[in-house]
Amino acid sequence: MRDALIVSILFIALSFLLASCTIEVREDNFFLGHGRQRLLEQRLSDTVSIKNLTLKTADNTVLSGILAQNSKSRDYLIYFCGVGENISDDYKRITLIAEKYGINVVAFDYRGYGLSGGKAGFDTILSDALVIYDYTETTYKPKRIFALGHSIGTTCAENIGLYRKPAGIILEAVFTNASDAVPGLPKGFVWPVNELLQFKASEELAKRKPQPEDVIKQITVPLLILHGANDPTFPAAMARKMFENAGSKDKKMVIVDGSNHFVDYESSEVSGALKSFLK
Image (cartoon, rainbow, N blue to C red; front, side, top):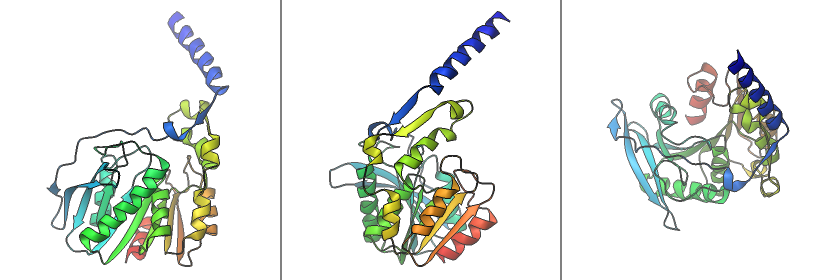
């Protein structure tokens, strides 16, 4: 009883402490990075196999990635992870796209993630996205290239849509700007942390230009937005605003019932939209 009372008192004290503390998120503590073992090269089915990739950037940073190669397709999709994941974490999603949607998928870890060298920042993930696009185009001579970004990865896909000529871009769990997005980050944590922590964007992040809502207005390539109706991190209202402001004439948005920050690529809503967009 006494121990339980002490724990309760400590928990209440911690709750008050956290509730009164707002944490400022800066760029230098946004990209945490985490490493995983290189994925084994293997054949997953009669049509899909995994190959390891490395790519050296202009500043001699080596990026590590994979190709989920579909032998029946000449189309390629470049996949960009969220800030809390690397390609090992999203391996099932990447291979599912290659298998289910009949397309080759290229995915590289951000700097400091997986086996990639260096440290990620907003400028580097955007510039590296263009390097990855050019690498894919030059190396594989695709018939068409698409870009899919999840969460922070949507900024990479947007940058490709702005500065290159992909067949289309897919934005999953998109956000409008840093000031809107950062306060929602703790919502992805478990209770009670998701209720106690309060985040706000640093002045540097808030004033960074351009923000995604600025970029989307300039994008004219075909666009598909996928967003979970129950996304606690970036509410679906952000996706609706981005969709309305998008400069693309060929655009579609799917708000997926029952999905949170990650949409279900095998649901009928998402499956129909992706198949239509990619084919």
